Amino acid sequence: AKSKNDVASALLALRARNDDESAGRALLGLPLKSPDLLRLLEGVGDASLRSEIDQAAVVFVTDCVRGKLDVLGNSISGALDISKLSSKLFEHLLSLSSTKNLVEGSDSGGRDYTRVSILQTLFAIHSRYQSRLAQLMVKEGSVGKHASASKRKRSRSQSDVGSLNAATTSRANLLVGLVGG
Image (cartoon, rainbow, N blue to C red):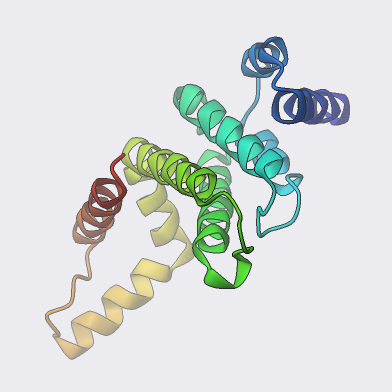
């Protein structure tokens, strides 16, 4: 597993730094799962993604995620792995959107392109694994606690898993529509 991750990291570096198309094709051909892609994202520069190389690496990893979407959640811990990958993508999106990380004269077009790529990937993940992620939330108790509190209060909030999924999907659709994805 370590050697596979080392090879994947080296291929990503070749693809992002040298614009090596063959390295990109080789990386896409590796049997990568969610934890492998998460490690690749964690290995990309600093969290602010200030450099164009780091942004290119994130875009390529998001392309890999969308290309391997059908097999990412097939393991026993698939929903948890997908959730961790999604969280990391949201972290990168937040970092890219933060005005604190803007550098004078930097390429805002590259940042925008990276944000759109992350949003498209998050939308694809949450559309594809919507029910499994909802089941994970129920198992972890986050929805269950909210639902039981909601039942006691009899509030008008959305407390069932189906409504939560519809709300999440609706927000994701809105975000992707806003950025032109």
